[in-house]
Image (cartoon, rainbow, N blue to C red; front, side):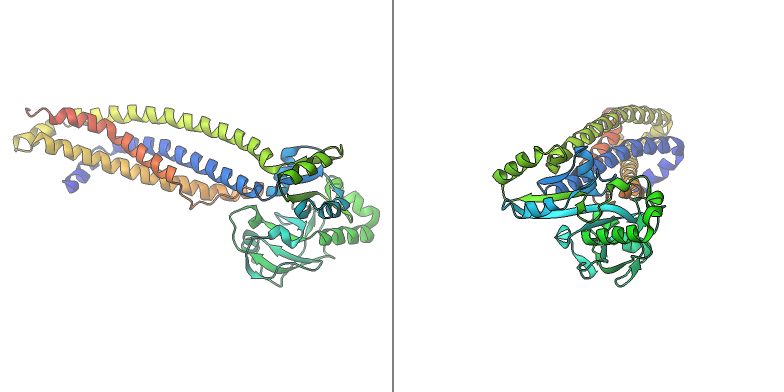
Length: 397
């Protein structure tokens, strides 16, 4: 019966391709949109949950959160490093981490901080940076540029690939991070003192000419005694609110809770995802109509074929089963193809969104994706099941 069903499917190739295409489009869009929304949500919240406060220059709360959590956009500016010492001596914090940004290595951004910033991130090889001009690179940076421990890299001024090179101040790689599936894979980490040293040498070595070359974005760089932001982990709720009240009174500072800010960003993402899911639902309804019409046309065209099968003694139940098998094969093939295509799209997208601090893992499959696939398969088979139930009740020719 199975072999005969396969042969019979080859007779109506055009209609079969239309059914497969309609299922692949609806299922593929639904699977892709859910996977992207879920990974972005998880990535943002897992990253934001570690620190409960970020302090930086006054400006956009979203920009400050995205810059320090995902290394996107430009820093808002700088704040005095003295605030770092002040927070550490307050007795209200468990962790205070300085954060600087302003240079790049090709497309990878240079993050000036302390080794504590990479706490929980395992090294694939080498050691954590300690001295000035030591650096640790993310997994994707090392992979893309063929780097290994002991190599030297020359950074560039600014956050693009066209800045003036700091040829006199190369960084030595002491370690390479294991793959994390986060924005850390696409960055270079060094001491904040390295950033100060590089810019200090630049000022002394180039003078006024350097100022002319740098131009736009100079005000966002952290020179000696400055950082772009401060990441804080307070001792508890009471300590958090005391710190927040105190630093929020300073009009030159912006004090945010990263989880709260990023939830607002996620609300916008969720709204977009809901719109996409609604469109997927509309496409599915249209697909049911398309599949129903094609199924009825196939059965209408097969009247003579069915009559011949009845004449040689094949029951209507067996004939109905034949068409059900055909439709199940078509639906299963289309759903599997949709799953493969959606994850191929994820793999293709991951390279583009990595520069925005968003890392997509093309091999993650959520349980809801399987549920969507099963639902689409059931919907694709439904029109045939209804038709064959009607057929199987007619034992006459």
